[in-house]
Length: 453
Ligand code: ADP
Ligand code: MG
Image (cartoon, rainbow, N blue to C red):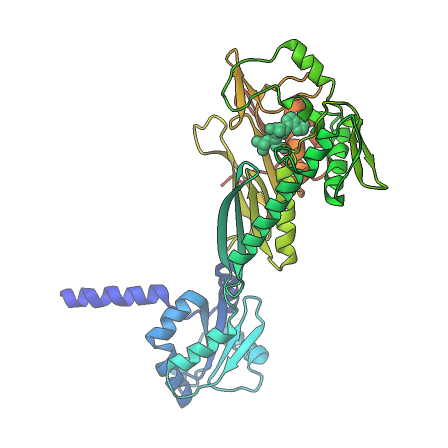
């Protein structure tokens, strides 16, 4: 009794892993879905001796079955001659059509390897010698599968993570390491902490003299000013003129004096950042004025890392620059990158999911860096009009094709507030947002699509 049970179980297992498919359309669909190739086996099962041998030696072997279970959809295209073996008419019609397309010369037996779009990759006749040479041949013809490689590191005061999906022969770790170097190069250029950076030079020469800078930094400042104009000054890199009077690390609860605020707030004005395109110099008009890229730098770095990787042939990837994400192509399993938007109250890990296809998503939140003043939580984002930290919202997520713009707009919408922020985003093409206010109310822009799974 028990041996019978055992053998049934093992046979059932085998058939669960390997089955001959007979419906060609269905085979193609499955191959597409499971990222497999299709093997057509043209056989005359009851008259062609070599066909029987091929089946016995190759297709019935354990090695073929286990290889096929992983990599192939095997389709039996049989042409039996005896009446007792006759196939249904529908099947005969399909098989004849397949022979007309893929086996014009009527060779039996013949194995034809197709990709999931039905194009021929290779053909093979029967050769004695067992299944292994046959499998080696298939393996050499089937495109190797893509692999996912991830590397995490700290930069710009934040955790970064880069994932790329490449074919196995690509040295993914080396590419990511180079992308990391690119991010560190940008950090050096835009840092206002590093006293030797070009940005620091601009700041120390405020009110004194213009500073000639690299076209790259010049371009970033130029684009920052454009966003300032677009947002009516809600986003303003000269916010940094006031930033030093606040501490956003929780070390103090003291609000600076109103006097101090009003003295510094006068220094915030993007119109006082003077650009000279002739010598790419930057001049801050007033003594004490400063610029900082806290709200746009990570987005820019994410863009540049992506650009570097794409230029080096990477077709799929995602750069996470401290929560500023930019994605292109697709992950190993699936068509788009599914991203969670963090729950600011931390009750659950994510409040919603978004699918990113060649899109960036940036979230500005008050849940990572903030200050409490008189038990009120303030974000580390400053309203350039008042000089006070902004309150009212918990998080703003912007989705658009450009990570740099998304970064700047997330900060701007934080300043502008929910109602006007939504109206503003709804006017912009290809920009969407999700806002969570202090009462945990979630608001979406007109065309914001969530992954509802
Ligand atoms: P995070 O750095 O957490 O991703 P943001 O992208 O919103 O969040 O950037 C916030 C940072 O932007 C602040 O720490 C500060 O350096 C800078 N910043 C604050 N207020 C403004 C503003 N109104 N315009 C431009 N930058 C700002
Ligand atoms: Mg930002």
